[in-house]
Image 1 (spheres, helix red, strand yellow):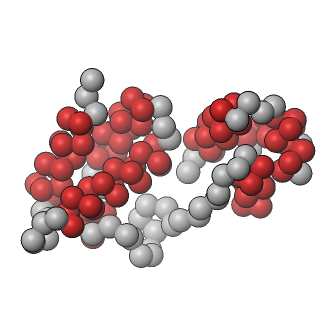
Image 2: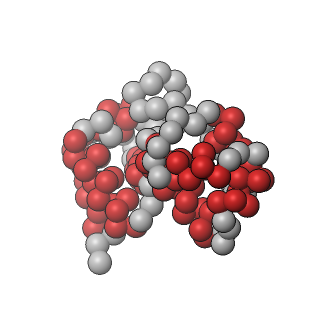
Length: 143
């Protein structure tokens, strides 16, 4: 996750909870300027600091390998490959903006939904199948 996205997420949670930076700083054991910088997309937070902030905001910190990192993906390999395509990235960005949610959360939700659709199939899905499923998600999100 990029620092600007983390900052926006932190600010959104804090504001939604009706809290000040000072109250969150006190609960997290961090300084007000440190949190203000993070919310403004600046800084290089430690995992410990982000964990403390998550706890202070009533959230849970989940750490996963970044896209392209080795590890066990919960999604089919052909979907992981499809998710690396420019079209997929563009649609995630558009859907995230439309729903005002972070791109990483939108990407995760979309991949999970697409994998669920694949579980209904009686055969491995092709790139064309993934495009069709993505088209369905796009159509479902049109106004």
